[in-house]
Length: 263
Ligand SMILES: C[S@@+](CC[C@H](N)C(=O)[O-])C[C@H]1O[C@@H](n2cnc3c(N)ncnc32)[C@H](O)[C@@H]1O
Image (cartoon, rainbow, N blue to C red):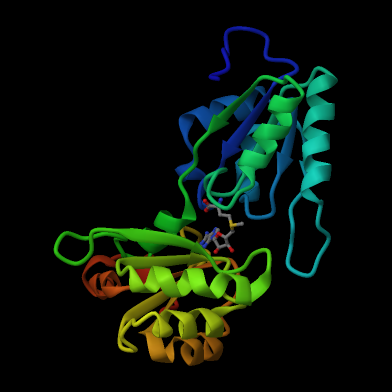
């Protein structure tokens, strides 16, 4: 449901996508809701500058950081319920889009189960914004008609995900892999098993839309070595497909070309 900002909104929750990092890429709705928040539960990938939109709110960091402290999903769900039931208007702020590998669905279900009113605000997903920030359109007329967004890790580990990577590779189109840095060698192997040409152009965009953005580019068969040499780290979005060739024509700004490495 869309919350009515002309009415008191205590005891309700907004699950809000903060976009890929750059605060300018937040939606108007996200900024408006943040401005009314009593409590904000924020993820690690959300840029801290976004918090200037909620100067009066109590901010709770529930982010999961590699190797660091993680707040379990059950604990986050319980916190959302508890804070709303205490009469607060709670904004749950998540990187990118809440429903793209964001576990926003689980939070919405937990709220629905408790009869708590909530709104879900989409955000610009890094799956399209990170390639775009590097000058890569995920679809392009005459090059590809579809793209797939794939998780590079998940429950069950590499063995469970491998058949899906292979099948998606077989299906053609652009492959966009999130959370894939750690498993890059397995992903590349599976994609080649799925029949992709070892010369397929690929790029990895680290911290797209931020000043720390850097991009590495290499043909599929060399991607692992080039990424290793450049010490590519998370968060990064991997793009596999002919669309990567367009980058040389589209990534025109100084920012786009900063720190790029070409294999
Ligand atoms: C748990 S997923 C969440 C995705 C998020 N819901 C979205 O729609 O963008 C986190 C992954 O998104 C990708 N990611 C998030 N922010 C990024 C950025 N600024 N640049 C590149 N990739 C990013 C990385 O692959 C990261 O490991």
